[in-house]
Amino acid sequence: MELTDYLRIARAYWRGIVAFVLLGVAVAAGVSLVQPKVYQADASGFVSAGESSNPGEASVGDSLAKSRATSYVDLARSRATAQDVIQALGLDVQPAGLIGRISVNQPLDTVLIKISARAATPRDAQQLADAWVAALKRQVDAVENPSGDRTQSLRIVPIESAALPTAPSRPTPSATSRSASSSA
Image (cartoon, rainbow, N blue to C red; front, side):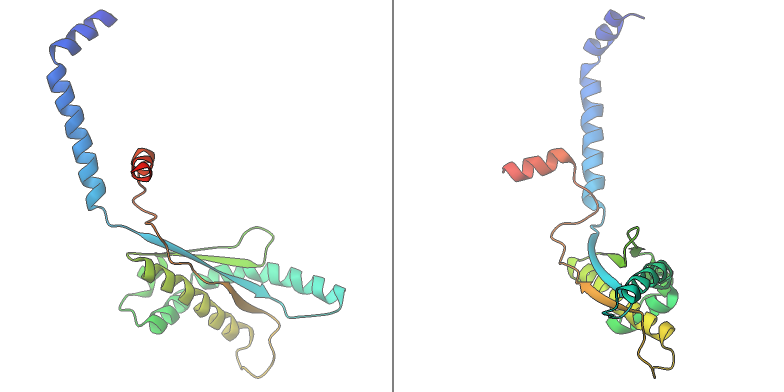
């Protein structure tokens, strides 16, 4: 078949082609409208190794904080931390389900731990992210100073509270709908 054959077929069945395209657009729009909205909020904690005026001790403390921060990422993803958040927020959910709503990372060569929380409402996402950093702080305190009788050298310091999300992170609106809504 040549191009002219395809054009002849398209001219003969153009109504059906247009109907299928419109049906596809309508189905895609319907699916997008019924998908639940998910909001994401981010909070951060700083792994501190204490204060020292001695440059050598400060350098060792920084190296220790960086090496421990990677371990604290796993601690942040633990069921114990999730259970602490459940109790703090009074949630009725299993720890494994709650862990699925957060992500934890430590940017390379930093002492920061970043928590991203996802929820159905902006307020819930914000509260979950902030509660997770606070729970991680309590878990680190329990690990680093189990008896609670000495000053611990390593701790988590919450440094950035989660901002209230203004738009859902999912479903992501298409670029055309965003530009159309901003020009209106």
